[in-house]
Amino acid sequence: MKRLTLLFAIALAPALRAELKLPAIIGDHMVLQQKQSNPIWGWDAPGTHVTVTFAGQNKSAEAGSDGRWEVKLDPVPANATPGSISITGSTNRKIEDVLVGEVWMCSGQSNMGFQLSSDWNGDIEAAASDLPNLRLIKVPNVGTQELQNDFKGEWRASNADSAKSFSAVGFLYGRYLHNILHVPVGLIDNAWGGSAAEAWVRRSSLEKDPRFKLLMESTVKREADLQSEKAKEDFEKATAKWKEDVEKMKAAGLKPGQQLPRAPQSPEAWLHGNARPGNIFNGVMNPTLGYGIKGVIWYQGESNASRAWEYAQLFPYMIEQWRAEWKQGDFPFYWVQLADFMAEKPEPGDSSWAELRESQTKTMSLPNTGQCVIIDLGEGKDIHPKNKHDVAARLVRWALVKDYGMKFAYRSPEFSKLEINGDKAVVTFDLFGSSALRPFDVQEAVGFAVCGEDKVWHWAKGKLVAGNKVELTCDKVSAPIAVRYAWADNPVCNLFSMEGLPVTPFRTDDFEMTTKPKPPVAPAPKK
Image 1 (cartoon, rainbow, N blue to C red):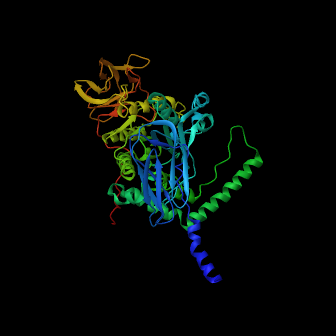
Image 2 (image 1 turned 30 degrees about the horizontal axis):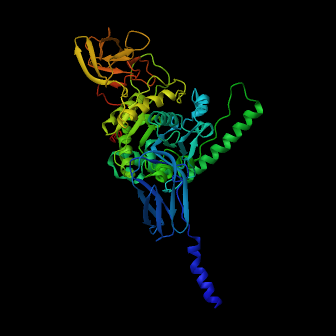
Image 3 (image 1 turned 180 degrees about the vertical axis):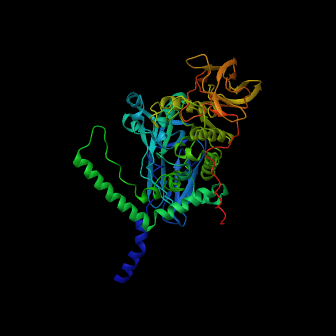
């Protein structure tokens, strides 16, 4: 009898341990996306029948062999009255204070992760953030080659405490939507400073695409190098020398303004960091994948600037992959073009940052995309400009017009046509509803360069000759063939729409990009 009781207890133990579990993205204070079906998922013992009840709906599913289950709630309109979601499986869960409204993912690198508290007006913006129906959740940075299905985090109502550590661009964007649309808004802060675009894509997808062969070959080589015994030994030697140098400097006393050298970077830093292909997709994206969203706002590109030519393929590919993974169609995807940064140069020429901006502009060929131009909002000495309010204000215009049917100026003027009339070049712009162009501060349109057949660039004088036309002349170029505008890391340029949106940087030439990979040099034949 005792033996039978023991066997029964052993058989019953797994059932007693069975527990309904939910991911962090699905919890108290969450916001469901209005007017579309919303997936709700979690885990339970394999084979368990799970029922989800919300707003008069009852949806059921069975946990699979891996324990995962998922249901899809029917679309419901926006609702600021808190509701609850009841889930019954091997155990019961109740999600409280659920709202329905607009949900946006806020993603990218450090300029998206840049906290509200660091904005020029961060103190008063935080003081104005007590908005119970604006909900925020942050996803921690996890870099790994192994797919993760959850993260540590929770939804919180916006207030001075939760908002100040949230993405400044994301919060201000969401607050505009909340105040203008008068519906609840949920924001997912999913940014990682210094991250490269290839880290945000599933690695196996990159490996299958021949366009990224060089990228993946260099990745495999770097992985092998960093995991070698030599890398370990070199790191240990560098660390020992660093410690010795630090002790010597401390003993001698630091001079005013002098700083201790940084510790050498461990090989593990890159292997588990924000640049290795697939790392962020696995650790950060996958746990949120499929959650009902309206769209994505994105601010990234600095880390890919030296590979701007590749970015023209990689960035749209990333967007396409996210949309395919999300299985929610071509949801809106709006990004911030790189700001002006680094030293101003006296003469026009080439620029990797200008090439990256061009790659971003080209990506607007994808449906339901848009670009916020901030070529006037950067700071030469700081890659993290502190004015995020104007960034968010320009970015949200895209959503208000394209997704919510409002009438605002929303798109920066863009190059349309070049005409050469002897020694003059006339550039025509698409204004997208604006009445005219407006040079800022002075009457001359500043920031243009022209070149002749020699392909040597010279500054040009710009004069508005019509609402959307600029005439360019240059004493050093008698027969111009091409024009560039704001083509520099940190250009001096002053052309805006009448509504205050800066003209999009552009070039009319198709000269080879400086960031295009050079073919390998063949070894010299042996004599």
